[in-house]
Image 1 (cartoon, helix red, strand yellow):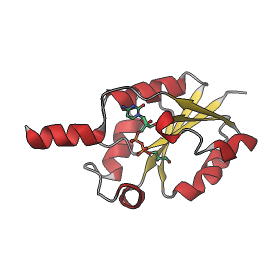
Image 2 (cartoon, rainbow, N blue to C red):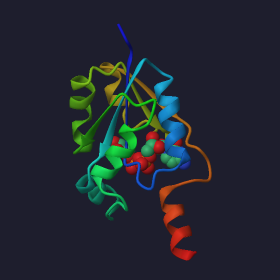
Image 3 (cartoon, helix red, strand yellow):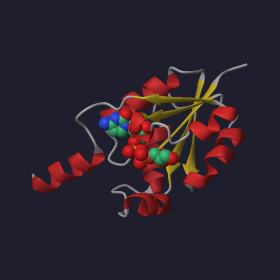
Image 4 (cartoon, rainbow, N blue to C red):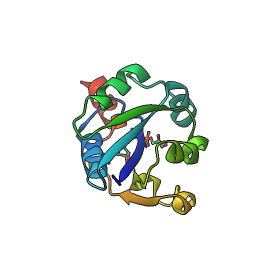
Length: 131
Ligand code: C2G
């Protein structure tokens, strides 16, 4: 049986920290499924619109070599549903979410990986705005 990994993110203004997370998530199994946050979810979570819309962010993530399947993550409350629907054996998240998804340990393994230091979408937006 192939081992399925699932991960989630907005992946706005795609950068190398996102890429490293996807590569490291993929290394935990044979098949990587990525939930890309919907624009509406992002607005609720971060109180601002993403720079790139959900269709563009989905297209970028879907084109990455380690990614087998993408879907739109409509709500944080649907995590268990997504894990079960995609048959995930392991949920991988950045450690900015450490502990937040431990409740799913009854249905899959839950792994938090350290973030790539010194890069973020917010810092990039500020850098570009100030350039
Ligand atoms: N990431 C990273 N290093 C960075 C920046 C981000 O490893 N320097 C990781 C995050 O930890 C996350 C993934 O890249 O695992 C996507 O990051 P975001 O787009 O910021 O994801 P977020 O908005 O936190 O969405 O259901 C959960 C959410 O959808 C997660």
